[in-house]
Amino acid sequence: MHYGPMKPEPRAIALAFFVLGAAGARAGGLSIEHVWAQPTPPRAIVGRVYLAIANNGAEVDHLVAASTDVAGAAEVSGVRILQDVPNQRHLVNVDIAPGGKILFSPGGYHILLRNLKHPLVAGERFRVVLTFEKAGDIPLDVEVEAPKPAAPP
Image 1 (tube, rainbow, N blue to C red):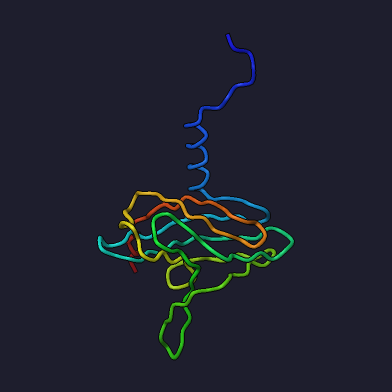
Image 2 (spheres, helix red, strand yellow):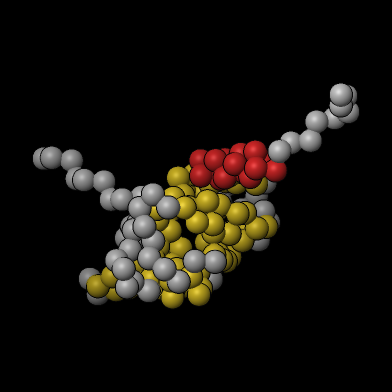
């Protein structure tokens, strides 16, 4: 009979981390919620990740990079309107002010995945790592979600 400290089952640790990551993450004063991506067509080479970042800390933090294994490159991007035409642009960093919240959503900020290695399929999950100036690297599990039908008028 074993009376020493219990060692957690490695699969249980992995499952707990995966479930917690899907629901969101916290690091430093940051909390990240609803991390998701849209499914892509079979031959698509780009995808996008969306999420919400809140800064509950006392200092500004900066999202400076993103990485993932499902694409050749990941970058923080945004859309701006120039002469009534939306233009996508790479962002060097995104400031998250103390008490502030930034929403990454279709038509706005997003994590752009370039050179996808395979299509993003509804119901699947993959890992993305966001790098912040102060909070450091935060690994997140991204759920690929099918688009929700529009509400009737």
